[in-house]
Image (cartoon, rainbow, N blue to C red; front, side, top):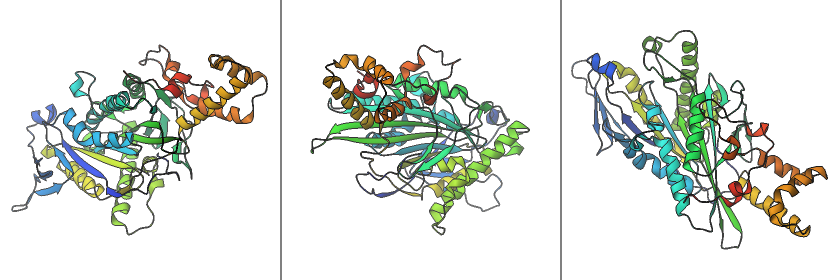
Length: 451
């Protein structure tokens, strides 16, 4: 879902997708069933050794090497600092980034990505990312301006749903344009001013996610979720012009791969599992095509998930995959499958580059529009404080087409103020396209720093 665009600072160096593995502890059900731990973690050498509980005599255990491995005693802070933080730092420099959690259902993907609200040390990758981004903005140079916006969607039964949309029955279309790449038409976007705003949006979206109980997980995610944060920064260049850099970060919580014999899924749950496994299978096919290099065709279009992650896998992105696994002997087949999947993914090659002055940067659009409006007001002898009324008056006197198009672009992004005092547990966010309302200047242009 990141624009490829023409305006980039450099071609970018080729680098592999980074892959780490996290092993969760044996859960209560596994302990009650006297399951055996079949995984050994060598964090120093970034290796995982897995023993086949049904191995023939003399069959050696299998060893896999990754960029990093984390044992059952690893903390949320360890995971963030050693895996996600470098990606977020690059996004703040104008690169695209993707962090995705993959694994069997019930292995801790959602815990890794979201964690728990309290205590703070149990927060996952996503909320730690929120604090990281606005901590960086707070320390930035006074001459640097920022615009941060967020979207949240899920892919459920191969249909894209806006988790922040008013109509949760609405299904959105995946489109593609040569200038900005793959995008979701009519997806809500919010301009945010602090980490709390992002947390509110995530909480609201999580309320709308599809979850359901299976024999493997009482609160199983039945959809893939993608939380996207776009960070635009503007700074005066040596040429005296303002230059915009735009980084996009996709935070992806994949639904877990499932075996019906273990989940006992039936009816709706079985249909969901079929779609989940289909999209994960397509993701595997994309990985294979990219790694093997024997086919000029990569089947991105075979699922909504792979289409939206097209730039993340083999494109303009710095990408991290966190594979989550169970150490229990009863899950050997699923765990070895996840490790093999992840082992192939680490061979994917991306070419990430800084996105400079991209065509879909809102910060530049708003700066230009505010400056045009300022000049118009000065010509009319009106103080800039009259911006709002003058804008409204232009509606009645025949708004020029250029300004009407600019106003329409502004209407496609909402501010947190438009949420008002809604209770995120009961209310949903209106889609931008259903509100023809311009964001407040202080939110969009001045972008006051978090103190």
